[in-house]
Image 1: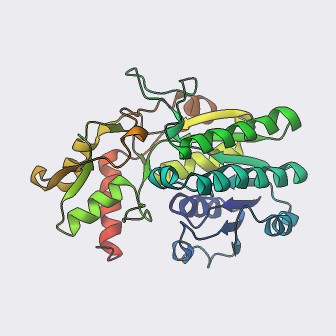
Image 2: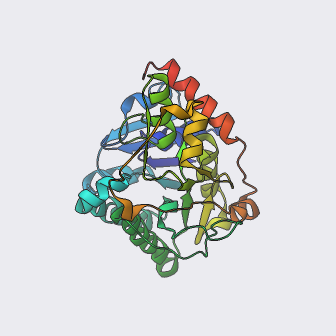
Length: 314
């Protein structure tokens, strides 16, 4: 197939492109590099089915008009402003990228009859109330402009399914981590903890650290993303993916550092956006796609630490 990945130079985007190439598809990548890095794609660009990398913005209609002349079969729309704290400080930027940008991509998919897989987030949910975790019917509670923008975009995506019969799928991966994730302020908690451990620094935790997260290894996430696009069963559906078990940030820090004395609790910058318990029920993904995670948290953390060591990011 001919496939477009928006945000393909990002952390999850890079792994999605990698998987699509391994499956034999022709892949185009659009990324404005506000969050992604060209270097993430260095080893993938050499492959014959990597067709083109375009530095550009999903809000630029001219670029999108030109790109969609390629007659794609699927568009995996991963491009977005993804930082919760930034969205609270600069909500307009997040709204324009995540809602307006998604609208422009949607319009191109409608005009060219291209299936769209829209990357949303578990942050739209309120919290996990039961031991079974959060399923797709759980209540939503956008506690940040990031979550609000993703929900608004989800609704636009689903409206195109109902109004135009456009094949669309909304996916809500839980907290994803692994190699190629940034290890600085915009990175994920696992990558930041591991980098600080390797650099002999303290591991800082916002608040009391009792908040829990369901952590999904990035290769499992990429497999979920692309398989959501392959199947017609997913059209018009919202689907979760996660590990199916959660861990407190305190326990995650202990796992990463192996030393409780390195942990330091600091005042939360935006406590109003904190979700106290995130635990995924991925049974819908399992039923529709036969998908389930292959990597345990311990395996994923070890692979991520090995990658950080190999890249001299410390």
